[in-house]
Image 1 (cartoon, rainbow, N blue to C red):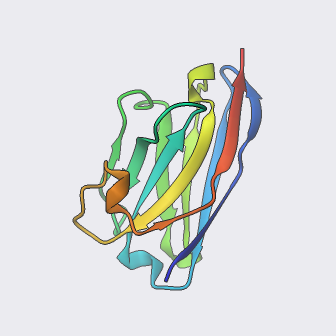
Image 2 (cartoon, rainbow, N blue to C red):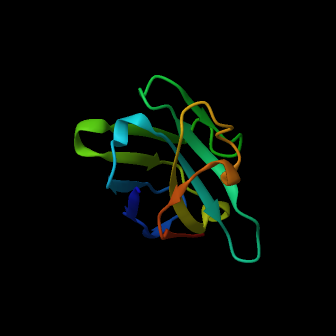
Length: 124
């Protein structure tokens, strides 16, 4: 079992930045790929970012590419999402997820473990 806890969300103005953290426990963190997803009110959950278990492979949704950066510190069992140039369309609950290597990382159904989410709100 893997337990994931997100933190770092909050209310920011458009153009601002936030850094989300996802702390993992319960299993060998470095063996899992990690993803960030988000879900806005009355919208479906969507893929945001992915990072491989070794940290060398990353991918992003087109909507956040160039603005968001995913990283991980395996020694601290933590994955991060640095979010810059935020806009109101980024407002959502952000979830981190853990899955086995080599899964389809853009699909939420492929992940085995999920955090409870952290709210991000961007005002205009």
